[in-house]
Image (cartoon, rainbow, N blue to C red):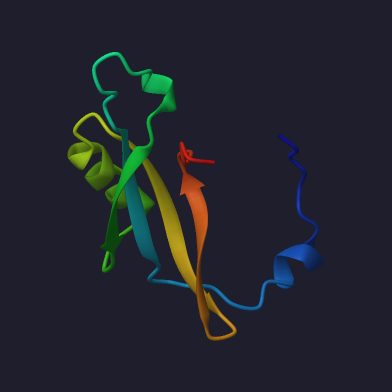
Length: 97
């Protein structure tokens, strides 16, 4: 990890901010191997949810933890740029990457 303080010009260079972000939570669990099969060769199932009208990131993470039921999860912030939607990973790791 590289950490450095921001100069004042860098702080002021930000041109926009989203005050009510939309989040996406992807839950992942690995499919069970058939009898005699190798578990590490099995794929993953994804369950994705869209969260809006949230107070803060902690609320999103708490919801994800409460609904994980043993699954791993990844949290993304959704943004629009140039008329296209995109996501930025803010927590977790996609096991299919």
